[in-house]
Picture 1: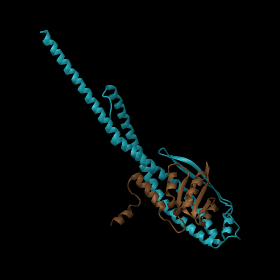
Picture 2: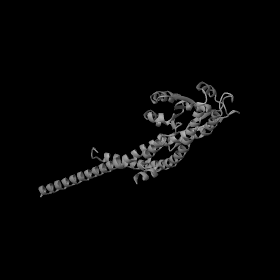
Picture 3: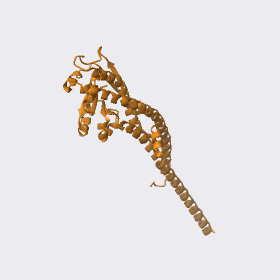
Amino acid sequence: MQGKMAIIGDGDSVLIFSAVGIDPYPVQDSTDAAELIKKLAKNYKIIFITDVIAKDNDETIKKYLTSPYPVIISVPSKSGSNGYGESLIKEAMEKALGIDILFNKNDEEEGH
Amino acid sequence: MNVNPTRMELNRLKARLKTATRGYKLLKDKTDEMIRRFTSVIKENKLLRDSVEKEVSAVLAQFSVARSLMRRSDIELAFSMPSVSLKVECTTGNVMSVAVPKLSLEESRAENVYPYSFAAVTSEADYSVELVGKIIAKLVRLAEIEKTTAMLADEIEKGKRRVNALENIMIPNLQETIKYITMKLEENDRGSRTRLMKVKSMMEGRNQ
């Protein structure tokens, strides 16, 4: 089964990904993105979303978490990561293990 | 539990307890193994995400420079025909009977990596195209592994809940009910025995 890839991003900078065959969907507003995600989820197997938009559409993205496809992955925007991707990892870890095995260094520092 | 204290019910409950204990052991082993896999997957996930985040924002920043040097319509034109056509083979893998996505990238590169004529595009754009070609394999891998992590986490949570329910509610409940029925049956037994003894002594008293 072959799948297509799409990227949803804030601003035009996602256009670069069309050079490698990923369909770019620039959006200006995070609220437009929710509809777009739902629409794209039917046709695309992998959807990349810049994390600024991903953060605002957290609930929509979580809906697709339980089935193997589509895979919705956040990527940082051009100004750098806002920590959404890390927060997802952390969430999954706490859900499964109940403890923090990767980021605990930060917690210790906070504790002091 | 609210049951009739009969021998049949007792047998039924004993069978259920046996199944529950066995199921509990199996489920616990499964969850433990899933957690073991999960820890290795999540470590890879973390490393991969860190490196991908750096690279992607570098690419996007690089491209925004390139874009600022060109008109939007030119950019769209230049990238509208990708020369690198990437195909992603999407199947589902199996990690401890959880269906996870498995992605493999099939790259069919054309001779020329750049999907446009050099005359129309600045060298900054060339550079970002080169960069994006390099990170795409990593991105696909990240997509696969991050989904796997999320799905495993979900499954582990469900498994844990089941194990806990069995351990703390179902099994003690069954044991308690079995104990109650056994005691009730013994009590009935003693009751009827004393009654018989009493009747016997009464009949003996009448015969004398």
